[in-house]
Image 1 (cartoon, rainbow, N blue to C red):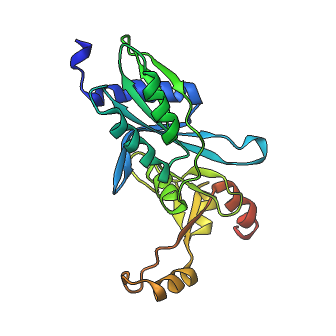
Image 2: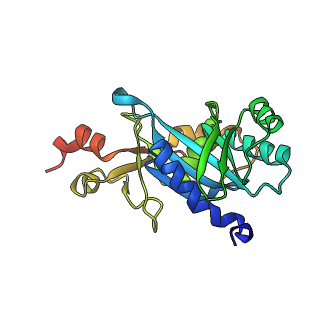
Length: 225
């Protein structure tokens, strides 16, 4: 019966493995940006006690019938917005030496989903520094953004509201409700608009920034009655 499972039915299996294997505090399936969607994605803390740095991990899930080089190339493409990229393949027999050589050359990790639907990491993904624009957009898609003061990534949204844990330029409300703060950098927005070939909506600011609830309290609590 397992042979007839759809590819997407392996997503929760891989997501559960990713959460356990890499201590991810956030995992999500079938998510991504406009030009590509990741089968499985996860976020984990990597900065130690002196940093709020995190890593984004993306896993492409296949069922062995896909051409390996094609699937590997697709997996590598996720490095534009993830720090580590993996190809997870459902197969009873492990990867061949040629397949491991291809994965090594392209720079992707490999995970085998065996006949018992257990995941095993065969090859570790190297670390990538993704393009900032897409990395930040991807993290926001997962509900997280960085604090402009402490540089820690914190949760800005809920399952039903992408920004349900922040207030918009209302410091008093943010402090009283123990929430983060969202604000806009208008000068930078105007500077960018001046040189953009495509004009954005007139009068609208896109340069959004965030402060976590702890920094908002630290910086502004003495100004709130």
